[in-house]
Image 1: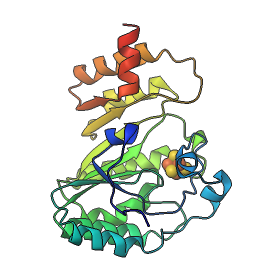
Image 2: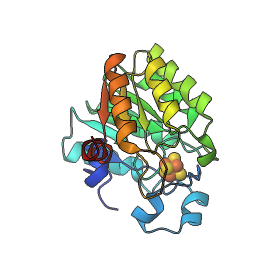
Image 3: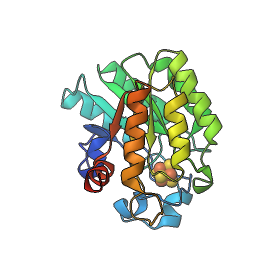
Image 4: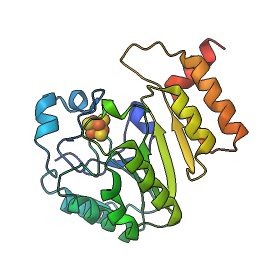
Amino acid sequence: MAKAIYQPKGRAKEYGDYAINIYTGCPHRCYYCFAPSVLHKDREEFHSHVEPRKGIVEAVKRQLEAERITSKLIHLCFTCDPYPVGIDTIPTREIIKAIKESGNHVQILTKGGREAGRDFDLLDEFDWFGITFTGDCDKEPMAASGAERMDTLCEAWRRGIQTWVSCEPVFVPELIYSLIAHGDFIDKFKIGKLNYYTSNINWGEFGRKCEKLCKEYGRNYYIKEDLRKEMECDA
Ligand code: SF4
């Protein structure tokens, strides 16, 4: 197995300096999912045969110890979801435990909904719990509903865990504007665009409006590089 804990490159680097991919695939069937192409896997196989990567928990523990990795923020996950709906997610819990016991912190990104709340007892104010919010859950047919994701995010916030939302890809700008205006329980917004698919959205305008709203409502935010370029080129 390639290193269990790795340093992401390219666009993924905007999400974190270290990451772990726990599962072989993801059952959520988001129509825009890039993971099968990144992994050079058949799309149907990726969505239908999902299990923990062989030996992943032990590999993480070994690497944390051998490389004395500490005080890092480790992202879960890029090429899968740490809480795949309908799959045994105990390996996620075991990996979070190992990360925390070694003095590191986690940054979770999921569309898995309330299942993730099971592990909130392991997290503290140095960890980040995040959900993806695209504005169109129909494009993520097997993931938890938007309402369930939002409820889980609120629960994390009530428990003192830092919360974040990845607004990418974006399908309905108005819903992102509304989330910025009303998301008092969100500690950080990461805002991107829709890549690889055509869209009628004017990205420059979208990005500028998001930034204006974030400033107006005092939100902590990060505009992803692809969107920032669009904002700059037609400003
Ligand atoms: S949740 Fe992420 S990994 Fe899973 S299908 Fe959707 S985009 Fe792909």
